[in-house]
Length: 214
Image 1 (tube, rainbow, N blue to C red):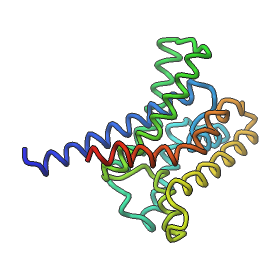
Image 2 (image 1 turned 120 degrees about the vertical axis):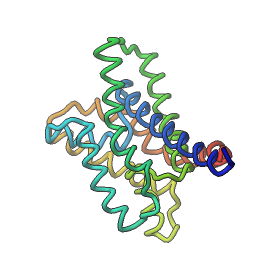
Image 3 (image 1 turned 30 degrees about the horizontal axis):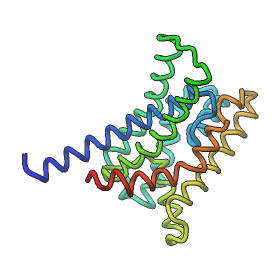
Image 4 (image 1 turned 30 degrees about the vertical axis):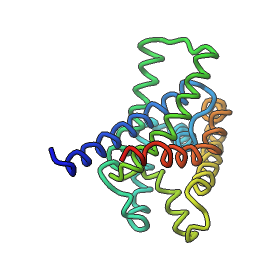
C-alpha cells in the first residue's frame, strides 16, 4: 500500500472513530443526568415536544442544517457528514438502552461524574478527529465555521461554537418547558460545561493531538 492509500485509510479510521466518540459522548451525557451536550439539549427538547424519537428527530434536524451548509460551506460536506447524521443519534440511543435496560446499571453519583467527564472529553476529541480527517463533518459542527465565515473571521471557531451552543441550549430549554418535560434531564452543569468549553476543547485537541496524527 503506497503512502497516499495509507493516508486515506488513516483519515477514514479517524473519521469513524471520531463519530463513534461523539455517539459515546452523547450517550454518556444522557446517562450522567447532569444535562446533555448543547445540540442534544435542543433535539431532546424538540423531540419531546413533538413526541418523536430522539434519533429520528436528530436525523431530520441534521438534514435541515445540511441544506444550509450546501449553500454556504459546501467543502464541509463529505462521507463523514452522512455517517454522522445517520449514526450519532442512534448510537446514543443504543448506549442508553444498553446501560439502562439491558445491563441495568445503577448510575451512582461517582458513575455519573465519570460519565460526565467521558462525555466532555469525547465531545472535544471526537470532533477534532473527524474535522482533521477532512472527510466531512457533522452538520451542527459546521455551524461554527459558517459563523466564522459570515463574520469574516472576526469570530474564530472556538468563540463561534460557544455562541451556537448557548443558542441551541436556550431553544432546547424553551421546547422542554412548553412540553412539560423534566428540565433536569436535558440541562444541568454538564450542559453549561459543554456549551462554554467544547469549542476551546476542540481547538486544543486539534492543535495538540489530531493535526499531528495526520
